[in-house]
Length: 598
Image (cartoon, rainbow, N blue to C red; front, side, top):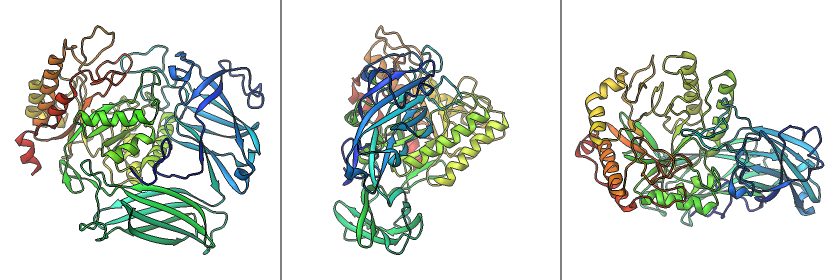
């Protein structure tokens, strides 16, 4: 655990003490006729329902549990501010996630609007706030529009295949933060192992930039001093490098982050004006390097074999919203107990507290964007803006080792030969690389890759022998596009070619037990635990025996609504012996892989 940790704090990479959690009971109203703005609900809220935030009205934990589509909904809550809170302070209202268009009024004054369902956004409500009770009103619009990034949320009335009940409105924590007039706004932390330095880019909002305004950065490890710098704040954007070499901390001069040893440094940022501390934020970072050498993925210069599991992050009574922080911790612990060293967080930007605990416990994360399902100018513009908000928000987490903007050609259905859609993926690749040149990018997980640092393949073959034979005997034909590896999908899009990248089977398995439930898995259901383990062993071992494959991702952690192919049910009960799954996952890989690695 880091020094900065505060239970339930929603933004673990930038922690202050002066905050207030607004989760809990809010007034709530449907507005199917879209009359709320005309009738000025932001000043006089109608007699209403009540809802428990941050659970959406579709969920049981919200207290409403209405799964029908309502495109316009409203929230209202009274917040009390003291005179001390208002004196020379900025009051920031943060939404960790609200889907999809959020409008905010405070005391009848319109504050602003945000579009997007998955990233954090904030409003400065200082000018509208008053001493005593304040009327906070939120209107959210969310349409069944397949041009907006929606992930696994259905856009028709009924769930089908692998698309589930929609998520409408506030679905992550809402909170207030009290800031001084000059404050630390944002920090970007980049580890540089070869130089043993931490590169910092820091944005400071100041009433006045001057030599009297200083930023002090101090780094410790396990309460031992590492280094400290003092930076004059002459402008908003600051950058510096801090040397971490310190023999007093370790004879190796530096602690690195890995799943085996998830070492984290503590870091504090203090804004000082005329020798007076005016703002302090606490954070942490991990020193690790992800790189690619020919067909291998390296962590800190050494090849790694990724044993990932697909994680959609759904709960029975709260859908996309975790019931609480402990539920996130328990998910991570159970994933690791199954012998996995990472998750592919599928079609969801998870609560940032999940990433914190992956950092602390040492679990790899592939961060994947929620897909749109139509290609248009509107979809392109929307996707690019929202994706980059997410990359910026989660950049500092050492557990994230791969960015995955697209999955299975969703939203880019003709990418195999359509140059506009191919250019779109290239643009997203290069835009992401411009901001983060250090992490690999999987540009279209599963098939029809354009430019991609890793080639990923999805294959739900049920027989291990057939799975091994397909890739061992036809590798070159598959990677050249002469043979389809999955139904009618080519591994590489037209106009592109395999360039020797690492290969990962990033979806396979999906085995469902035949337990008389409605629902589905991939291939035929198995009748009992013994048959499940036999099939699981067969296909997992087949992949591990492939000499050119450096990892896999099994589908999936839990059942999700109509999809019942999890290793756990939706209540997080193991469906088969977890120790047996762990043994299969951690069993020494085939000698061919070891020779290839060496």
